[in-house]
Image (cartoon, rainbow, N blue to C red):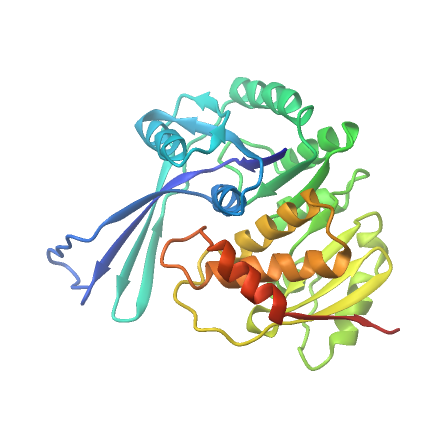
Length: 313
């Protein structure tokens, strides 16, 4: 089973407008509301692919109840820890080809609630083979909280796939217990290392990923957007080239990449096929109107067209 972790879920609300008018009333009759958060995007894509997945994290208030009900309607297994404060809204206003976002910081999770989640997580991890940990932490959590989750996963021989950035990522990769995979994009890698990279000099990225900082991490997949990815598995580097596609909605494609990797890993795919699978799901998500969804037939079509080659050193 794959367990997905979302520690700051939201109701994602989308308001499409022909024109956004400032300092006056805007009306729309095409509102969409979905259970959101990076980890829940991962969950839905694994579910679309037919994987055995369970969502966990923290949920509170009426918003939390709505998120839980949406997952239930979709037939997705869930086991969240209840919290006192209200889960957040994330608002996107789609106007004139632009996307203006209003993102709430979300609830503050108490120490008792954190302890309750850790107890639940330890029980769930005993049933899992793979765990994905995605996105930001709600307020109240210490910056090393993801490090604790990775440590628990490692104690139970569960592969932890981490998709976060900033201090949370730094805390995890500098700890003794390492995640099985990290998936920074180029901008996140630059922020982590304080170093600029160019797509014209992929050797520099290889050299950066060979630093002692990354020792013990089995997989590092660096997303290069429409240019594909560069990946490191143990001591082997891969270049992933993807075909050009017609993009409809790119939001959640990074989450879908994690989902594809987790699904492929659960099916014991070899390294090159794992990379094809994760990139194919990211591409397929970008061709859906709804965030965090894929058409398995489209995933299969992209899989066949992706080129993965070893980089000789």
